[in-house]
Image (cartoon, rainbow, N blue to C red; front, top):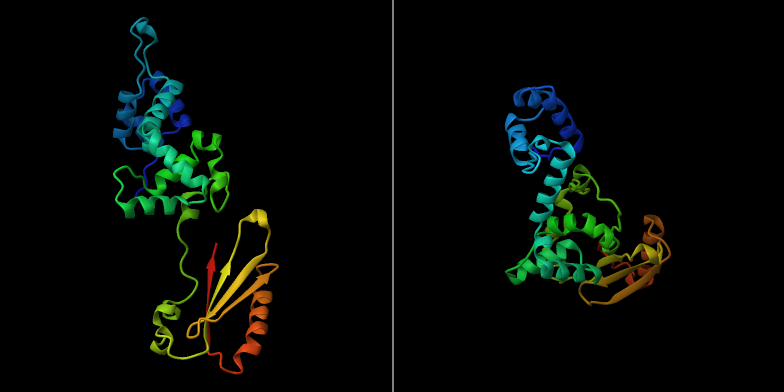
Length: 245
């Protein structure tokens, strides 16, 4: 099982400061926090405050240690170090691109300066990104990012053998009339629940477009059946429905 690393929090640093005043060893601090001993040694080494003018003020202080850590993490972000790349990413976001599309396009074009989608999401939900309200340009429009477990891709709802990749050759090669592909096109939330269903007959490429007042399954399927009835004359054989946002 993969172990996920997490940075020390301010509350943990408060405990470390208090335990140092109690003269506890780093090993004992690590045991009480449930951390590896190297984490405590590294914390004390990297975030120790040195005052050259008043040496008595030198020591480990939780608030100072937290500020050191935050400053280091901010300085390591690629979009903070590269303003030009940051402006490019933000322009794409405001133009309606998703982080996946931005990162994918950079990778496809072989850009020398590029970022992954996770870096873009971290920038969106960082302090600077929240100040610019970049989250408003995401398809989800969430002010706060979901937890790691909620972001994991859910298991497929349909069995793999039902995938259109395994449809018969007569359908895949458009040899038989009566097989339809239907797409459900959804819009941004500000436009309401209205959506559009498009249906294309695979052989003739005949197109049928339907406007739906809502996105519940039963009304949409009933409207599809009603629209196909005068066109099919008993020749409809299969249909595949896909969703687009």
